Image (cartoon, helix red, strand yellow):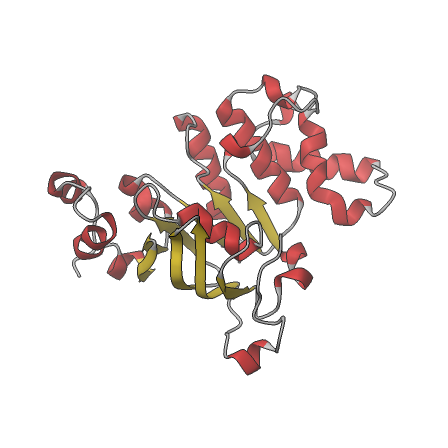
Length: 267
């Protein structure tokens, strides 16, 4: 599927888009008659960890997929570091929702991770010792080296998520986009994943994750983007993760008792 990108019909400068890792302008996506995302702008800050949050059905995953060109928008555009997506894919690593993956596909863990090395492998797809070593290093980073020869379908949900993160690491990207990376995983896996993501940030990489657990937003992320079909707010957690914005995003579905338990900004 294709996406209408800012640089399809002009340069980012001509269209007024900045050079941020991911800039979305006027994005609208519809499933049937009802828009899932309506005229959304988002600017991702470089070198930060950003959480995309909102209620179920708010358009969080849809926004990410539209920005990546996985689904086609009715309107809007996205740029990656100020340029069209087509020429910037090598700078992006995407970890989809685990539920969207066919885990019955007969392949080993090490083979999945090596898929992240597609640019290095070239057209012949000839795997050399250096590629195996790099893939194993990525598995080690997520604590999965002992499972390298295991069939991917034989792993637990948390283990599968770690493997997909290792595949993303193998790409050596600048921008990491993750769709619900902590959904359905055990506590140990969540701890391992957030540790890797924070290390990426320390290396100057940019991380964006669709996130559902409001209790960990302040602990895990630097910035937050709130959405409920339309953009509600975006900015640093310290000033944007507030009761006012949560009420606006969740529309009364989030009880005040729950809000009171969160580590919220004063604003």
